Figure 1 (cartoon, rainbow, N blue to C red):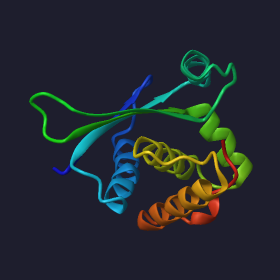
Figure 2: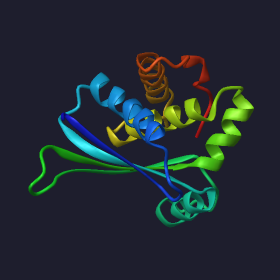
Figure 3: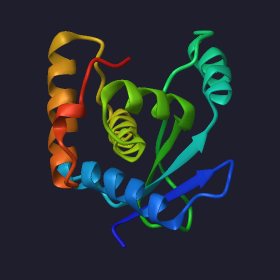
Length: 154
C-alpha cells in the first residue's frame, strides 16, 4: 500500500469511520503526489486538544485540529512518517451543528486540513490560505463531500 493511515480513538472507533478518515487523508496525499508513507489520526477530547495546544503552541484555548509534522524515514518502514493529526470530536460535533452538515463530514474536513498541514501548507498569510482552502475543497470533492463546508477556521 502506498499510504498507511492509522486512526486511533480514546473510545472504540467504528471501522467505517476509520476508513472514512483514512480515505480523506489519502485523498490529500494523492492530490499532492506525496511520497509513499504513513500518518496517524487521533480522535480525542476537547480537553486533550487544549492541553496539547497549550503545551506545543503556547495557546491555552481549545482547538479543533492540531498537526504534528515529522517527515522522517522510519527504520525498517517503507516511506516517510508524515506525523500525527489530533482531532477534537467535541469540536467537530459543535462545528458540524453550527455549519449544518454531518459530524462525519466535519471530521473529514478536519482530517484533510490536518493532512495539508503535515505536508507543509499553512493559512497564516492570505495567499497561503487561498491555496490551502482550494486544496481542501478539491480533496472534499474527491471523496464526495460538498466543498461548501469549507469555512473560516483557525
